[in-house]
Amino acid sequence: MLNLVNAGNSASGLATSGKGIQVVEAINGATTEEGAFIQGNKLQAGAFNYSLNRDSDESWYLRSENAYRAEVPLYTSMLTQAMDYDRILAGSRSHQTGV
View 1 (spheres, rainbow, N blue to C red):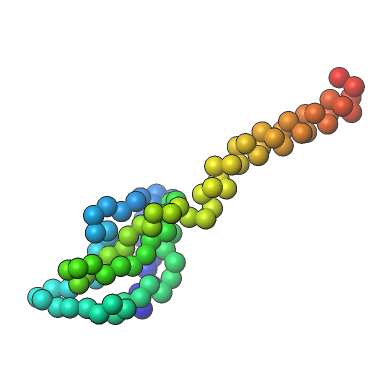
View 2 (view 1 turned 135 degrees about the vertical axis):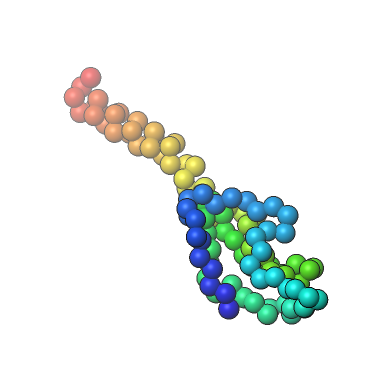
């Protein structure tokens, strides 16, 4: 079981390209079985989740998932929600003062 930790700024996660970020290297013709390594914890950075994957070269890589973290859609709607809330408050205030 591999417990992975983001060593950098957790807010600066990036999408991985190619094979991903190598975390286990199979050398000198070594082979690994599917399930030889499992990710022991959830790894998140920025808007991305990362998962552990074995590649055809028998090494293991961290790859960003195509889907954004669950919180990301909430962040994108916060501005609209804040504007709606402001409009409600401003409307109720003008109603109370008779303006």
